[in-house]
Structures are given as structure tokens and as C-alpha cells.
Length: 285
Ligand SMILES: CC(C)(COP(=O)(O)OP(=O)(O)OC[C@H]1O[C@@H](n2cnc3c(N)ncnc32)[C@H](O)[C@@H]1OP(=O)(O)O)[C@@H](O)C(=O)NCCC(=O)NCCS
Image 1 (tube, protein in one colour):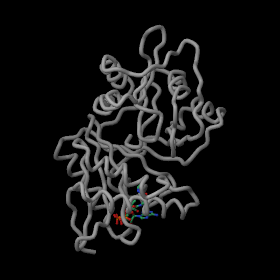
Image 2 (cartoon, helix red, strand yellow):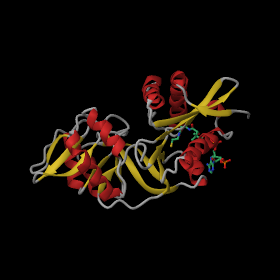
Image 3 (cartoon, protein in one colour):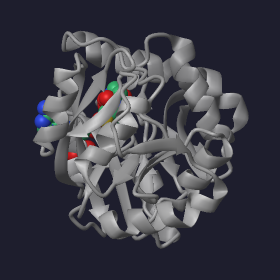
């Protein structure tokens, strides 16, 4: 099939949003899962945000003026987050997905990005295989947890809104746990009033850019993460991502009546170090 790849432009958001909805909903329905994005609008708004964002690179595949799919590379921090990638169900399995992946990976090489990561929906054999063929390694599996907010406060764990004065401490904590910071995302979340920190004995021991699928958290201990989750106003769906290796946090979430939406894998290309602390990834990584 003849198609070309070009950079996404603002006018693409509606068609890319429709395709993103259809692509994810079709695969989900085939596997008996609810769609990741419940409506076209729920997919199109994040796509619009990604296309408009100056530090997120987007590409579309096009054939005779028709968009076939899109892909994104989040370049806000040291490590780039890839996705969402989606191809029109009518055009799938013909190399469009591979070309959209190659386009953003070429961009990462051009910019000398030390690492690229993504979150892969575990039930989708095709994306798993495609990413593995392109060199991505699986680093862990995560359950997306959703449900009612918990309204829990833990004695000795003070959760409060993060301010710009906390930025350096949050970034230092991320470096300690992951070996790199996520400064771009932290700065944005603080500016939007969406980041929280948890303090023990007056010291910051964890932060979150939001307890959702789209945001990440880093902490010294799982208890710190529990305090941040306990204070969150909303998890949304598919919900926050719990490392299945963190059995304490997974069982704690289940014990608080939260439910598993689906299981995803984190896959990485380039620099990676095993996290030395507690964390929850975003849909990027
Ligand atoms: C994932 C997605 C983007 C892939 O796009 P696509 O155009 O269908 O994929 P391609 O045809 O380029 O590549 C598929 C590759 O996987 C291989 N493949 C497909 N099913 C496979 C399987 N069951 N086992 C092994 N390999 C498989 C194909 O042979 C092909 O490999 P190749 O590039 O070496 O020839 C597309 O299916 C999609 O939009 N899915 C819905 C949204 C989604 O799930 N996004 C990813 C979220 S993690």
C-alpha cells in the first residue's frame, strides 16, 4: 500500500482522534475489554493536546490525502515517551504501524535521545510483536486500577499540593529512583496545580503529577505512594498503573475495592536502569 509519513499539524486532530478511538475500540472489543477511550471525543481531546504541544512530536501516515494513522513522541523530559500509536482498522496489518514507529524512532536518534519507552496493552499480540521486533525490551507489567476515590489520610504522611519550590526536590527523587528526571512533566503539572507531594517528618518523600493513567508518581516507599493515592480526587479510567512486582501496592489497591481495567507492559529502548524505589508509570513510561 502506498502511503507517506509527515509531521502532524493542528488540523489533523479530529481525524486522528476518530482513528485513535476506532483503532483502540476495535481491538478492545475483539478481546472482550472495554475501550480505553469511551467515546470519539475522549480520544480526540488528548490527540489535540498532543498535536498542539510544542514539546510533543507527532506524525501521521497519509494516502491520497486520507489519514491512515498517527503516532507521538513526548520529548518533555530526558527519556522520550512513545504513543499513542493508532492505525485505521481498515488499513491495519499492512506496514503502516511499523512506518509510524520508525518515523518517531528516527526522530529520537536525530535528537540523540538516550532512551524511548512505551506502555503496551498486554492483550494485543500485534503491538507486542511489532515493538519487540523494533528492539523494545519488556521491563515489567502493570495493572490499571480504577474506582471511587479513597479519601484516606495516613497519620504521619502529609499530602499537599506541590509548588515550584518543590520542583528540584521532586526531580532529585526521580533521579534517585529512576536514574533520570522527568522535569518537563513535573514543571507542567506543578504549573497546572495538579502535582502533589507527600511529606514525612517535614521532608518530601514522594510526588505525583496525578494519580491517573496519564501521569506518573515516584516515592521512597510504597507507603508514600499509598498516601498519595489515598488523597487523590479522581483516578479516571483506565486508572493508575500499579507495578505487578509491587505486590503490596497491588493488594492494597484491591483491598480498597479498586478494580483492574487491564494489564499493560512497559517496553524500553536505550538506556534503562531498574527503579530503586517505589513508582507508578504514566501511559508514556
Ligand atoms: C498496533 C498497530 C498500531 C499496528 O499497526 P499495523 O499497521 O496494524 O501494524 P504493521 O502491519 O505495521 O506491523 C505489524 C507487525 O506485527 C507482526 N504481527 C502481527 N500479529 C502478530 C502476531 N500475532 N505474532 C507475531 N507477529 C505479529 C506483523 O507480521 C508485522 O510485522 P513486520 O512489521 O515485521 O512485518 C495497530 O494494530 C493499531 O492501531 N492497533 C490498535 C491501537 C493499539 O493497540 N495501539 C497500540 C497500543 S499499545
